[in-house]
Amino acid sequence: MKTDPEWRLAMWERRTEWPLTGLAAVFLGAYAWQVLKTDASPELHLTLEFVLWSTWVVFAADYLIRLSLARHKGRFFYKHLFDLLAVALPMVRELRVLRLVTVIRVLNRRASSAMRGRVGIYVATITALICFSSALAVLDAERGDPESGIQTFPQALWWTLTTISTVGYGDLYPHTWGGRLVAASLMVGGIALLGVITGMIASWFLERIRMSTEDTIEESIQQETDILRDEMTLLRAEIARLHARLGDEHRCDHGHNQVVSRTGPELLRPP
Image 1 (cartoon, helix red, strand yellow):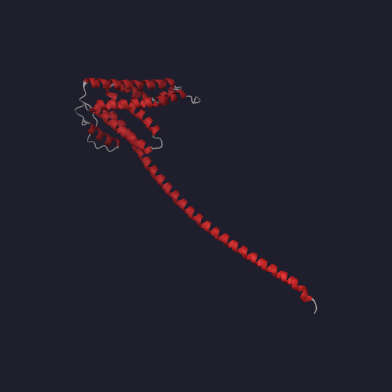
Image 2 (cartoon, rainbow, N blue to C red):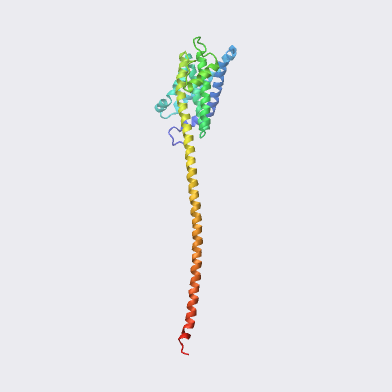
């Protein structure tokens, strides 16, 4: 393990994978509760805010720890620039919907490792997670704007489905900058998801065609093998009959020669 120059970073990420996944689930639940329960008491609202900010501090600390453990900090900073933006930008009230980006990335990392080899389940899980989170985020950003048409969760969910599928009916659209930021992210994510799903379907068809072709070839080879096996059986039987016939002829010739050799001198003796 220590031959890897980034073994300390890899060890930290492996040890914190499950705790961060749990915190991400807690964060998503608290955020959904805060957005959907509009009649929450001030005490409940304060508690949810405390949970959200405490969890967010843990995510920020995780980024700083990973940066400190990285041996090549410049490479880490460049490769995880999006993580830095997702940690820093939500400190601004108008951009707090970006908190969900890090949550989705954490849950996505766990799902990708747990569902390796089960691409269909993984894509369906991530798609549902992105749709639910995006609906919450756009509702959180748009509900306070009287000019926006997205004021309820069903409306937000409908807008999310039409946007992620790149249909875009235009009956609902975000009006605030925060909502447009969610929309831009969802559009890019929708294109990426459609590409993955299209690739999955194409791969499935190619796999089925390959399996069908292999089955046909295998069946043809089996038929040819059976025919050759029958022909070899017939050839063996024919060779055995030829050997038997040659053996009988050889015995007959040998007996005839013995008769000639015994009677020959007697025929030559004068009476």
